Image 1 (cartoon, each protein chain N blue to C red):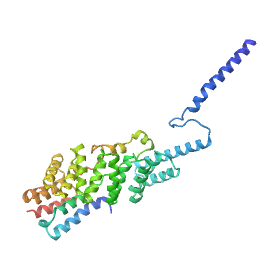
Image 2: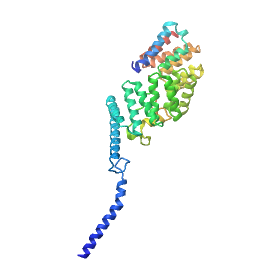
Image 3: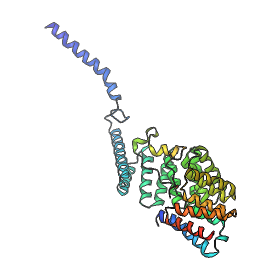
Image 4: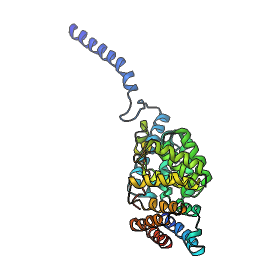
Length: 274
Length: 81
């Protein structure tokens, strides 16, 4: 009887010791997939529930956007943002909301959403890229150039940043900046024919027709059926007084063009150059 | 007005002015360059990002945004237009 009692006390002591050792570890153990410790604190539980709901709504919106269901995505994202999430959820939700708004044709609202994403996380380069793209879609060249400068300050190697900055400069008539940006883009990726064509346009704008001809020929060497580049080459040759070569370029551009407007334009120029 | 319509209409309108007004001989290179510039493509918006994708920036849009290579950056390809 006495030995049985000793065994019972020993077992109880062992149980207490195991509890003392295991309890702090259990409390510090996170929930699966969530970097939060276990808790029974009501405020922390509420905050965690909100964070989980927000993440789930962003996930649902993401899937809706992949299916092209922009209105559904917008509804989920607005409910997610109403929960006032922290980072990086907040900037992610603003980014996805901007994308939905842009697809729904509400470009001013899209710009505001991408700007909020950038304000929430300055290192969010995709949000900066889309902010400039929306500026360009809105034809707000001043905003595009300012936002592109900020983008390149954060990510100077970004091909998207260089392209968008160059495009904004070219549309604004700033050939110097366009030459710098497209030149930097091509230094990293010399095989990008569309970029070489844009560089040639900037060179034409700057009056550097020999350089433009060289770059257009390079673009056409990379992509022989590049109708826009062929058309631009015709214009440069025409400027140089080479009417026969210009006519050939316009004729070939008309043959290669898939867009009816460009095809018609090139054919007209070929006729006029005869 | 759709972006596609704008891309096509702008150069056409300009060319009508050029050819209908003074003829090819007096069409300036600036106008020709402007017609091309107007039809230059704005890159497509980068796609959606899931909440989990922001962890360590492991998501395609952010990788495309930071890339220095045109094809990885999903830049427009106008060579077939």
